[in-house]
View 1 (cartoon, rainbow, N blue to C red):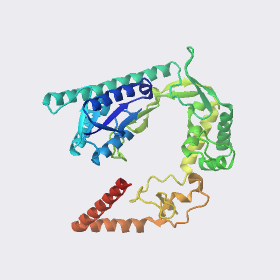
View 2: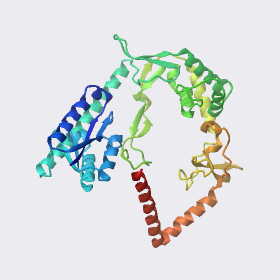
View 3: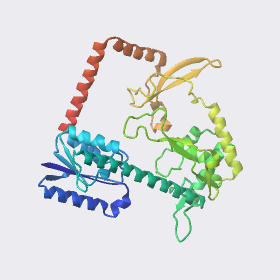
View 4: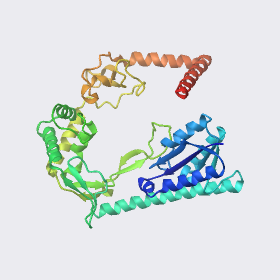
Length: 404
């Protein structure tokens, strides 16, 4: 039989401790003992990936191989190596079963017997419980270190160097003088010259200053964080944010329904961590005031308008996404509404010249698209024909990728 093996560890430390090798040794021994054919390209390994998620590179390749009919049986060391959540285990087992590919657990074989299925459910529940316990212990351990004055972020903000814990000295930050001078310069531009973040980005791109990644352009969020983070005035904070499930998830993938949206915690729950100050507190407060003023005056503060085709349009000239923009004449009266492409922003997109595509009028484009959708909804036969056409196009693309 054509066999494949799958091994997984959650952390790089487990990989260094030979956990992967021990799994592979047992899996290869199982394949040899049962006389299965095991090719080198059918050994799938995910190192450093959590079993509580399904978007794992090796697992995706394994599922593709099973779907293409390349495998007869898949061997996994134990159910928790396949997935930590029972729902994910059932999903994967059912998917493999539909493709005609059997799944064998080497450490604890599971059959279709009701007792074995009950054991599989119990193992999945125990694995989820163990993960929750470990996550809670890790969280509380980090909070205790933060209360003791340890810098727990692991990575230093721009302007600092991270010094790991050593010889009873807690992990802490030290000032990087070269980067700190850039930080002070940004604050001078913002406060003394009343410069916007966008103008600061232009100055940085035209000058010799570079971010840590070495690229020519600075990110808007990096500069804004430098100008707003209280760490530069001498106090960093841990436990500032809480991750919750988003109200309107953008994805339907494996992370859908998980807490991926960051929200600020109440100020009294923040844990202060003293760090060396690059600027004084009054400078930090002046910067906050100027950023707030810039936000009020910004013409991009345009969250009150709704656009039917938001996040759905792509410019045919430059290939970049398009966004809605509204200009105003008299107070509160919209004059023009357009869909404009990001290619016109040469600073943020690092382009030599602006995209020359004419912006599309929102009212005309929305009306045309909605009219087409409405016509399809009123004609079920045309709608079914359109779905069948899209399905044929998708199948032809899949066949092309398989041929390659």
